[in-house]
Length: 209
Ligand SMILES: Cc1cc2nc3c(=O)[nH]c(=O)nc-3n(C[C@H](O)[C@H](O)[C@H](O)COP(=O)(O)O)c2cc1C
Image (cartoon, rainbow, N blue to C red; front, side):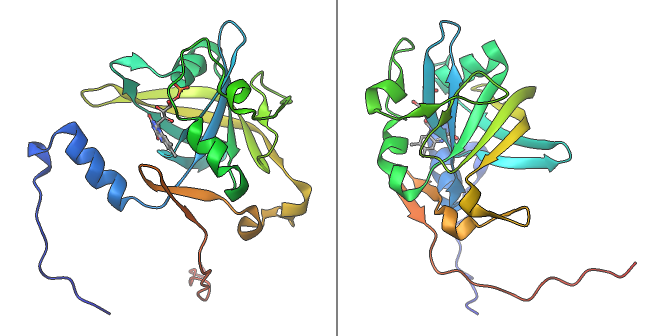
């Protein structure tokens, strides 16, 4: 195993927001992507990708997405989540990468990304925002907590998953075949990763007690 000895030490308190962003998004990789659909107060469907995304708890199933601001203003997704308390996290695949990526382009609040990009939508069951039809997994979520961080008021929106919607061919014994899912992950800027070689270790030891 290679040993790393000559390291550049970068003092975090001296970094600008942009410089810290570059370092964080360069080493916290690959990041899974929540392709989020929401509905505005006027009923317009919005779709955008967010890679500051993880699961937080499994009972109840809670997921978190961190959303920054654009020139100090709430992004449409954040405004809609706050306004309606509902959102859908769609898991984008390799086939959908171009549409997923361009749904991050800036549009006016009265423009709908799915409409402009030709992203097909299907009705959800428990929440108003529809799911993205080409996503094999969608999580219907209800907002349960908001946590604000930092000088730019980035917010972690915590959603309780009400309904997991999983394409039948990916599901066996309650498990999702994550290799067949073919998810895409974000590296940085317009650069993404697909699943590469899959490596397996022996199961971790668990105490008998
Ligand atoms: C793959 C990808 C991941 C992104 N992840 C985040 C994120 O985690 N948080 C965030 O605030 N913006 C993120 N963005 C930027 C938003 O998608 C972008 O600001 C978008 O225009 C927001 O759309 P909206 O105003 O319709 O909500 C990401 C962009 C891309 C392409």
